[in-house]
Length: 117
Image (cartoon, rainbow, N blue to C red; front, side):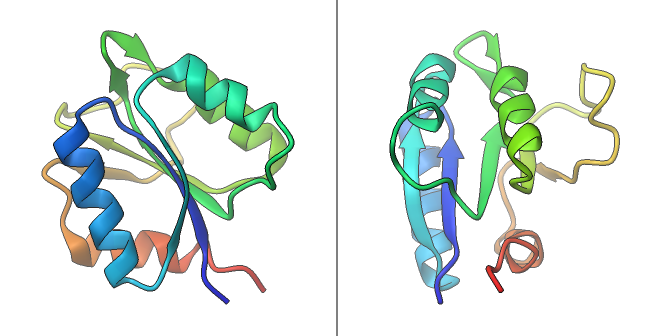
């Protein structure tokens, strides 16, 4: 069964690259969003929740943490992707951070943790 992975990334080319990598890794893109509000609206809708998510930390100047909090409340695993060093938010120290540009090997390790039983 393919993992359904949510992507929150505001740069279209980066989002397409992550979508392609996920496809190559045998995953299905559950939804790809370029804005925090759009991602939150989708999570609050009728669509089935994803098996995991890849979240860019800074989405057009807005931090992605409200999405991360929603996912955590639902028990959905996720990883952050960032071009910055450390995360600028306490409470997420245990969450894996993928450095940008995303390495497909690191992404593979992360999405293997998303696999549904």
